Length: 224
Image (cartoon, rainbow, N blue to C red):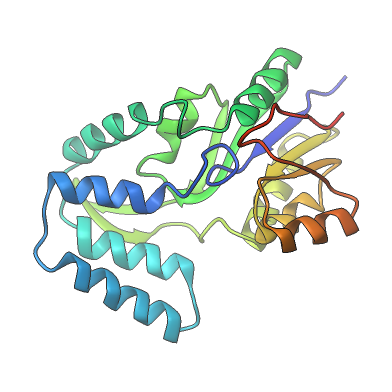
């Protein structure tokens, strides 16, 4: 029997909220940069007026607020950031679902639009077999900030799931996400679940035959 694949989103699915901005804020507390609020506001303005490209926004914020950082400095902050994700930051239902899949012998894949400065470290801490996320460029040992992959969101997550299918032919897929954009790849797997979703996303999921759950305050209900 082929091994099943369990694909988990990160922000809002495993964690209770976004991780990208807290990661940046924590970095700035350690490495203050003059005028950073105006830098962030300017980047947000360009995002709003320039087509709402989330990948470009991430790249610009990292480039303007972290560029030139050394790999040891970034690694040290990443270790502290990930260690600080305590039970209060993680959804109990998500941890239960991860453990349930692990006990079944399923392959655990963390698929996130957040960046590889810290997502692989979260995946390692939670025991994932593989992490797929948005890549960030380095140059001569210093952080550059340009994206090295597409932003892993919406249709790009679907493409990643299709790549996994090609690598693991015959495997059944379970997938978990929390947003309307996650429905794109959830609809493409055998056992999808929308967790912690907003009203609109829940309504669309139910109309599409996708199970919904709240993992923030309740135990996990894994698709079977």
